[in-house]
Image 1 (tube, rainbow, N blue to C red):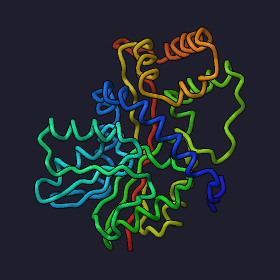
Image 2 (image 1 turned 120 degrees about the horizontal axis):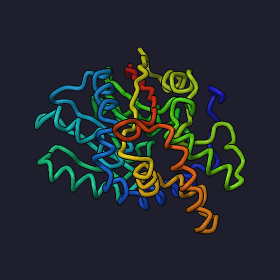
Image 3 (image 1 turned 60 degrees about the horizontal axis):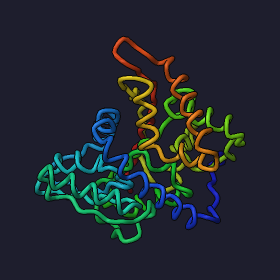
Image 4 (image 1 turned 90 degrees about the vertical axis):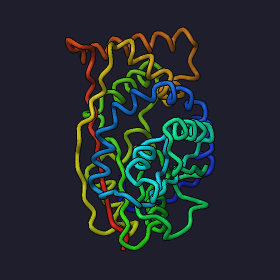
Length: 289
């Protein structure tokens, strides 16, 4: 992928498709919230450590999804701090508001917007977080520039993405099986998606192009642990809308056959207590000048 990112001519249409997909997936994400929190809780803690989040901070969480790391941040910043959780999906944000209320968090507000942060004031926050967001953004350097502009001088931004397909079979194996059985070509270079920006310098270069200083990164392991391959398939069907989208054009019987193949492939990760599927995450932070 070129370090000089080109404008995405169909960006608005792409974002509209994403919004519809995330609205559709919101119920599945809410159903599997406990699994998501368990899976990525360690990633969230790594993110917080890298930006030294603390009481009184004003936090902007971009692409909050089911509400993380926004809700965890709200507990840290306390009553003197504030968290603004943003997402494309109104349905996702409704679940976030429900979870915040259930947890007694009165310092969380929501805003429906994309990763380019229309509606967010410049210089208004101390911290920006984005967990598994940037790989879905058509113009990630533009998004990171917006994140920097939202920060006060000296503020910190942190982002988490997945590393390459070899270290993330929870995603790469199903996608490979779907593409093979659906006779789909490989995605074009630079296309947004779950494993985009996975080369060593992709995200680092974009942080620097967006004007961040003191860029740093950590690689962390976040294996997905579930009771069985069958449970993984149920989870994937209900929460990973992109998988369903790839084979939406196929007859239902063929889709069912593909899911059976995916379950079979995931059995290689069986352990005595269930399955443990590798997942590797790159966490990167930078400082606004």
